[in-house]
Structure formats: structure tokens, C-alpha cells
Figure 1 (cartoon, one colour):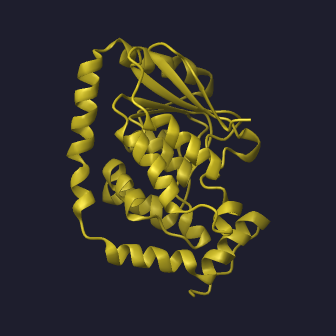
Figure 2 (spheres, helix red, strand yellow; figure 1 turned 30 degrees about the vertical axis):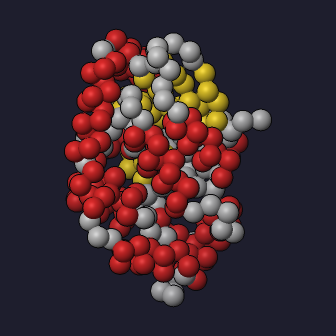
Length: 251
């Protein structure tokens, strides 16, 4: 059974994370399916794609069991997020619950995020001994700026959707009962706009932020790799899976 469901054959296409029983944690299969969903050109009648999720959690990030045994890594999620970011038409995330680590990045790589006020967003990698790749960190800098990126990365706390909206990181945060109506208004407005204009503006916005890709970051990649291979990372992942506090030793 597919872990990513696709529906809609008109102006609005729906992409649904369907692993609710696992908090929509991204395993290798989900990453492949999401990448494929955004790798092909849009249908002629399409105007906007909507990403939703089943269950109470939008996305808990990479599946730590697969991450812990090396089945998935940063390259797979980067490929998926790049496909979403480069998609030629607007992408809207409707976030009904927590979006954590890779789930946070998934939401922020969309053009619009409409979230329930009950949802929380964050990058908790420092709490399990990991660090984001250059590709993932630069997206936080784009949307949150240096101050917001420091708070999300270095503290690792989950921020309420209302705070995310106040900081300008997401489009709207609304009461849970108003989520669908509010998201529908945004989606309908996008779908009513001129498709050639949408394509041109999406390309313009993506290109305007591409300058960070050219910054030398080989030394940063090395630091991230050291963290990923560390004993602290193994301890952090184990502690998360075992629901206990980690004991970091800096090695």
C-alpha cells in the first residue's frame, strides 16, 4: 500500500502523507514516492499542488530506525526537498500537527504553509547529536533569517504555529477548526491566477535565492559528517527511540 497518496485531476492536485500510524516519519519508500510526485511536469490543467498528512502529526522527520542503521541519509531528503522547491507551480502545505526536523523542512520548502494553531515546528537535531546539511540549513536562513535560524537550530525547541506566523516563517496559523476553510481560500486564490504568471514568478523566486548554492561549504559538510558518525549521534538516536534523555560526551 502506497505511503504517499496522489489525487486530483483538475486545477488542484493533492499529495497526502499516508503513514499516520508512524507519525508520517519519512522512510526510504516515502522519500522516493514524494520525489517522484514532484519530478514530473505538472498536468496542463494543474495550477497548485497541496501537501497534506493523515493522522495527528504532519511529519516527524526522517524515520530514526532507518536513519540509525544507515538506510537513509541527508542526500535522499535533499533530493526530495529540491524537487518540491523546483516544482514549477505553487505548492501549499496544510499542516494539521507537528512538523519536526525533516517534517519542518518539508513544510518550509513549500511556497505557502497554512497551519493549525495546535501544530508545532522545529529542528530538534541538536538534541539527538546530529546537524543539518548545508542544503537544509540554508532554507532556514532564507525563511527565518539569522536570529530565527539560530533559535531553531541551536536550541532545538519546537515553536508553536502562531509564533512561526509572527516570525514570518509560515503564511497563516489558525484555530484547528478553521484550518480547512483557510487553506481552501489560499488554494482557490492560487488556482484562479494565471498559470504562466505563476510559473514565471515561482522561477524568479527560486532563482533569487540560489546564490547561497555557490558558497563554499566543504568544511561545513565535514563537520556535519563528523556529527553524523559520532557516538553522541548513536546515543541520541537510541535515546529518542527508547524515550529517555541522552547522555552526550562530545565524541
